[in-house]
Each structure stands twice: as structure tokens, then as C-alpha cells.
Length: 487
Image 1 (cartoon, helix red, strand yellow):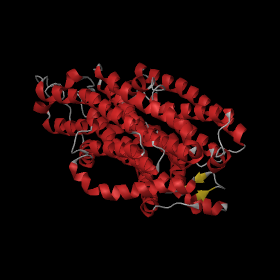
Image 2: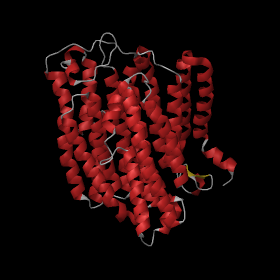
Image 3: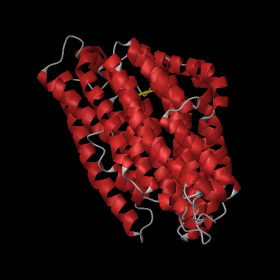
Image 4: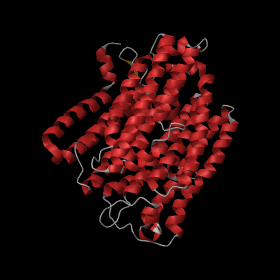
């Protein structure tokens, strides 16, 4: 495939890249006064990329025609559905950021530029069909994310979060790069299809070590146990709009990349990595559930909730089947909606002066003082707990069903049992908001954008969304089938 054809396939990525560069110049010349127009322009760029990707997802594009740059990238339906979630989550972060940073007089145009470049890196990640493209996309996303975590330069918690994320992220990148070098050294290729062919006859010791190190590096990016230690501190310390972004878009990109790596590059030796993924899934579910129980800070609790949800998503990958990959994508769609909704609700918890309220003590009796906000939070928490008839339950159901069909009954049973444990801390929200004496600390008002995002998220995870499950299932099945054709 020639360069012009490849450029035609990556028009959404070109829009993000060119928009990011132009807005970077506008930021440099316009100063802080350009923050609002730059944010609006960044949202438009993300929206344009979203609508350009959507037709390919609906058509289920796959096969050789989706290869770009001589096999470096694969612009298929699987990558497309991940890009839709990434664009939506990044756009949500841009919408809620101005109100948060304006209070601190810290809204600067580079925030939107960093989000754009992070989204570009994630788009390259999910389309990677080669280890080199994988690493370029991963580092482009990571470099923007390190700066975003420490965005509030004068805030000690934000600076600490940025430093922790940078140091541990650099370590994980080194582990991943070492695994990639071992894989290349013992297979002679960096192409996913080439690696799959090279190991089809069995794994040598060097290839196995390469696989393990690659999986370990990716486990950090998705905050799976035992590489989860950075998550609670970074989620608590980073500005809340940044935390909302970290908990959604990069998580989608890393999980989609891990699925592509596992099923395309190492698909012919699934037995070698299934045990690792199964352990990470069980450990993440258990640690996420138990770690959240004693938390009083809502953002830290949501960090453990994120770890817990990653475990459920990994159950789909552990099946090593296309049905499992499809179930993962379904769970991710509702996970993004629940995550965006929960963090938007946290952003709406503020006192009369606009200061953020982030502890359970601040939301006692919220149903009396702010009933609409409390009921939206109730639905989101019930959905995260997997209580029917909300869509969080449906996401868990399809993942467990894929596990049972793949003869992983024990894994499904453990997941179901652990979800009962996890329900405890989600129900804590309900108990505090609806049954404790009101403290009436939440007095700040929120703009229409916050309410719109919260209501959209609530509708997406409500029983109304069952009307679209058949359509969503068809999309995810076509996306998963693209992995089979690629492999």
C-alpha cells in the first residue's frame, strides 16, 4: 500500500495531529486568554475524528485493506470502536475542565492541546500492528499524561501525582521495551502477524520471557494488579478533570492494545498468556474490592473501583476467544459511561465558594439537599455494583457468559463472588446519601454542561439502553472478527 493510501486511512489521526500543532501555536501567541477558543476547537477536532471513524465501525471494516504504512498500523473496526470511546471520553474531560480550573485561575490553553496529543497517541496505540507503532503511540500518550497529572504546578498533591506517575510510568515503559526487544530478538520481526507466525510452532525460553515482560508493561498501563500501586495516589492527587480522563480514555486504549497484542501477536500460543491474564483478572477484582472498603476519599475509592473493573474486563480477554473480545468491548462502553458520570458527579460536589468536596462526610444526606444529583449517583453506583436492570449488570453478564462458554467456569464463579464484595462500598454511597443526617455542605451550582454529561451517562447505563444492546452486540462482534482476520 502506498503512502497516499495510508494517509487516507489515518485522516482522523491527521486531524488530531494538525489541530494539536495549530492550537499549540495559538496557545503560545494567545496566552491564557485563548483557553476557551482552544478548548472549543479541540472538542471540534475530537468530534470530527469521531464522526470520521464511526462509518468504518458500523461497516465492520477489516482485512488487508485496513493496513497502513506497510503493515505498521491496522485501521479496522476493532481500532475504530476503541477510538470512538477515546474521543468521547477526551471530549468529556475538555467540557468539564474550564469550570474546575477557572476557580483556581489555572485554566491554560495547553490543557486542551495535551488532551489532543494524548488522544492522538491512544489512536495510534489501538491501531498498532507492529511493536514500533505500539511504542510510538504509547509514549506519545504517556508524555502528555505525565504533564496532565502535574498540571497544577503550585499544588503539592498534583506535583506528587505527576512525579509518581512519571517515575513508575518510565519503569513500566522500560519493562515493556525490554520485552519488545526480547520478542524481536527471538522472533526476528516486530510485526504482530510475523510474531504470531514465528511462535506458532511453540515458544522458546526467550520468546516466553519477552511475552511476560510485554504483558507486565501493559499491566501497568491498565492499572492491573500487581502493577496498580500508582493508581489511588495519582487519581487522588491529579486535578479531577484529569482523573476523569485517566480513568476512561487511556484505560480503553491500553486494554484494546493488550487485546490486540494477545490475540494477534501471541494468539497462536494463548495457553502461555492465559494464566497470566487470569491471575491479573482475579487479583485485580479482589484487591480492587477489598482496597476500596476502608476509603473515605471518593476519588481514591473510584481508583480502586477502576482496578476492580479492569479485573472484570480481563476475564473477557482470559477466554482467548472472539466472544470474550466482544464482551470486553461491551463492558468498556458502559465502563466509560459509568466512569465519566461518576467523576462529573464528583466535580459537582462543591461548597458555596466552589471548593471541591471529596469525602463521604461531605455528602451525608445529599438526597435531601440535592436530590437530582443524589439519584444520578445512586444509579451510577448501582450500575458499577452490577445490580440489574442497569447496564453495569449487563456488562458483567456478557463477560461471565463468555468465560462459561470458554470452559472457565471457576473464573466466572470467582468473579461473581468478588462482585458481591465490591457491592459493599458502592452501597456505602447510598447509605451515606439517603440515610445519614444531612450536613448540607454541597451548595455550589453547576453549569449546564456538567448536568448534560451526567444525564447522558445516567441514561446510557439505565434500562433504556437495553434497546440498543442488540445493535451494540453486532458492532462488537464485527470488531472482534477483525482481530481474527488480522491474526
